[in-house]
Length: 187
Image (cartoon, rainbow, N blue to C red; front, top):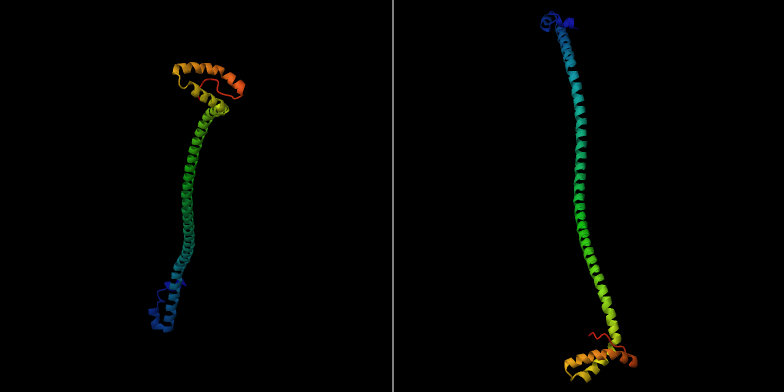
């Protein structure tokens, strides 16, 4: 077809004088050839355009999926952050409770140690009080007798008599079977 297009005799203006049908046919052939030439240039561009649009749609879908994944990850991160803060508060509360419990335990240990030290003293005092309770009747009789008979005398004479009476208190215990304090200590 190219030889006919390049021929200078086959121009629609020249053929119009010869035949109007030949001029129309020549115009049509040149239009078809022009269309074919343009089509060969444009068609690959249209195909590349369609391919680019398809790839663009795929990339936009991929971008949308990535945005959704990012949004979900951000929500998870926020939930984890809130959970972390809650766990930190819980840890601090538990640490405070543990510190208070350790302090109470330390105080209780000190208190028990103090009570243990006092227990020996309390046991000794309890035994002394039990012994004094046994001697109460005899000590009361001796005190009454002492006050009744020795009250009017001077203190030096009373002290001297107290020493003699304590030595003789054994006789008091053996005769009446009433126990009394023989040590001479004041209870």
